[in-house]
Amino acid sequence: MLKQFSRMEKTRNWIIILFAALMGLSLIFFYAPGGRGALSPLGANNEVVAEVRGDEITVGDLNRAMESTARMQQMLGGQFSMAGRERMMLDSVISNRIIRQEAARLKLWPSDEELRAEIRRQFKDPSSGNFIGVERYREQVASLYGTAEKYEDEVRTDLARQKLNAFVGAGVQVSEAEVQREFERANTTFDIVYVPVTASQLAARINPSEEEARRFYDEHQTDFRVLEPTKKIRYVFIEQAKVGEKISITDEDLRAEYDKLSPEHKMAGVRVQQIVLKVATPEDDQRVLAKATELAQRIRDAQGMATEEAFAEAARGNSEDPATAKEGGWLPTPVRRNPNKPDLLQNTLSMQPGQVGDPLKTGNAYYIFRRGEAIPKSFEDAKREIEVSLRNRKSY
Image 1 (cartoon, rainbow, N blue to C red):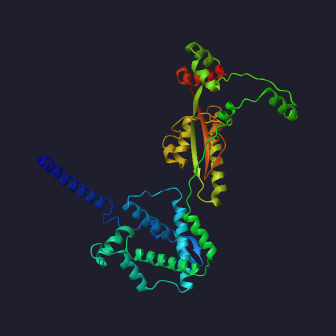
Image 2 (image 1 turned 180 degrees about the vertical axis):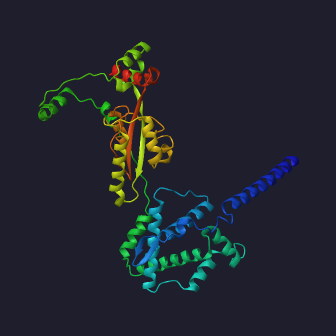
Image 3 (image 1 turned 60 degrees about the horizontal axis):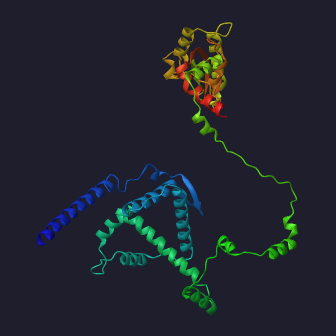
């Protein structure tokens, strides 16, 4: 038995050492000198987000308050909620500003002596009951608030809030009757005795006689009149998706569906070349449009067509999109039909191979497109899409 206690004591010592090491690592990780007290880029932002009687609240004020709260919750092991925290923190900062202004206006702002007394009351040594000392005090508040000055500013605001509450509450009068009612409400207890009654179980125990039933019918004949035609309906619900899963579809069925597709639905997409001319300022819009129009007319022939080489040479010399210009204007992926995405590239699907369109503008740039050859969609590529469509159609 003594040996067992000895082993338990050694195990306990190892657990204490391991826990101390983990605490040391966590302090190094969370409170390294480069991180504590460092001000994020938003902390120096002077953009005004709110104003309280001429007292401006900046983005930096809001961010410093959020960092202070996050640091405190991290030390206490709490969770810092992301949802709505900016709105909640801004409301808190605005509330504090209002409290400070009202306390100053009513001459209730805490004095330095009141601040010192409150700090000494909060930071007492449990063993002696005396103040823990300035150095220990500064270390403790710095770990939670960054600096002692920030903490003391919040203490002053809390003291001002207490003074304002006392000032407002001092004028409230409570009658003897109200005190009596509140006392009775807070101190009255009672026991409840109840019996649950279930309607279905109660109805099963009631057996009305034939005479009682007829008398009830005679007294309530209007309740039993059928004023509208009624029908009894039986139905079977069939879920289309479940039916589709059970349908057998062969490769011959899929091949037949593929053969019936129109030529445009047998395309995997078309290759497209482009030339991009950017509009730096609104004043340059007409100049860039004129340049794009002249360039398009120079590239294409009388039928509106251009060779791949001619367009590629113009793209390398004029396009302001470096990624496609060095590739002769070719887009990296083919353009596919997408009714849910009506962008400029969808226009190239209605053009003829080799055709060069007029300049089109989107955003801050003009685009000149040339449609290349269509990329055929093989049966294997279309097989999955055809199967889904055919299965849905047959299940319906």
